[in-house]
Every structure is written in structure tokens, then in C-alpha cells.
Image 1: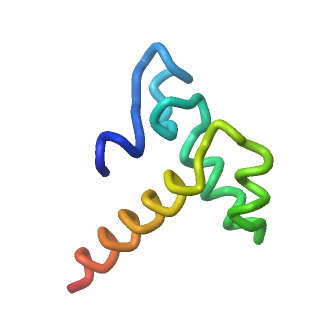
Image 2: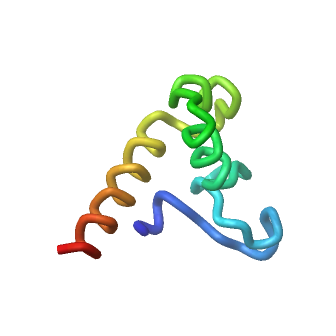
Length: 70
């Protein structure tokens, strides 16, 4: 995962992977999407995360999944 998308530091949220520059766990986005919530709902709840960060994360995840099966 590109270093500008996600960070993990033991001093921030105990090392939980978060969106870079925030304290918002990446898992929270995945939980929102799994529950049928929209990206807009997530962004409304977590305004420190930008739409660009969410889209870049999802694009990177997609690329990695596709690369793993090809």
C-alpha cells in the first residue's frame, strides 16, 4: 500500500492501520462498506479523511486483488 495512503505507528491508535494524517482506521471504511453504507456516509462521519484518500485506497486494494488472481 502506498505510504501516503495508510500509516501504522504504535503511537497512533496502537499501531492500527489508519488513513495517513488521521486517526481513522482503514477497517472503519471497510466496515461501513460491508454494512451497505456509502462512501459519502463514511466521509460525513470522518471528515478528516478525504474522498481522494478513500478512492486511492480502494483502487490500490482492487489492483492488489486483481494481481493476486492473475
